[in-house]
Image (cartoon, rainbow, N blue to C red):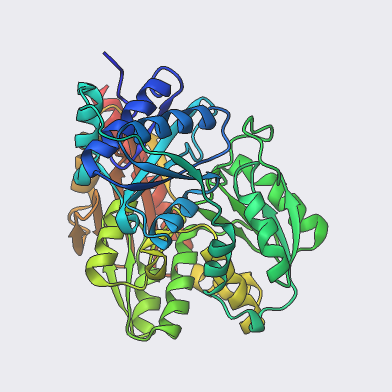
Length: 455
């Protein structure tokens, strides 16, 4: 029997070949067609060394199931989303492991209009069909057709900014040897920016390390290039570029939380009284900015499937997670790692202010710890101990995702990972950096003591 631990809450990812291989990929293609009955399906892949063979096996499964496949080749996840909704396809599948280790791969599945297929919306059923491996004989065999969508995709993205308002900027771009490089090359002829390219060429062996700018050790090349070239801003992406990370002219890494607030305010200037979706981990800066701009801030459970579902229900113009996932109504409510930096650079150009000046005051008003991960044996018990410790101090408590305690001039969110025995902590305060740091240290100490007691 196949090991199908590669099926996760929102997507498919696992080690190659023991958890994800060509046989599993073929069956996923068959199961996808059996579940969705699509006539036309987009597929794309990242540049990992195993992605080509997995995508080919997936395509065989889809075509044997009777679906026609349109292959966009090596691309970012958002290009599969774009091709699916823009070309009015019945679904799309991206073969990618994003920022996971070198021996991993995976898949992200969507249906029509690029609606996500996750555990609550069909992924469990697809897994069941893969396990059964009892597919009916097809009455017809589909065909595979290459599809070039890059020009339409770039044109769509450029529609989010006023190109007339853009001016010359020196921008460090670090693709991490992932899939972002070729897209940046296409942008160059349309934008007045000078791109200083770092780890630019796609290379599935990732000679400079797995592209994951959330890891502090992976930021040094971007920071060094900013300083060497006296750049205005730096941008780095993960492997499938569904997330982008920004650095200011001093090489300071900007937490995604503050970019959410910045983009929310920008969208509300263009779409007055609109709704903005945000996650529960860090909230005060976003809520403050949204309310001050006359918008409505709506909190959603963390995770792309939940954010996208809530955005559709609320018809929200924008949604953001502090993990650097940004979602856009005009992008079929999907996340994009290209739209955010375009909007931020537009703000730098139109305001005449550097990124640091756009954000310093917000960072002073709402200092935050950034996400801190702790591996624990009994996450529920540790969360209970922490909650009980601060219960008397809490003015409000929320369980949208994990537990959030509002203690007046500081708050925290503590939540379990969906896939591993890890607790994720975020702490913020109202204008008191020392308090934020003090409470962060205090909570971590309580977590350590609770974990020791449970061992």
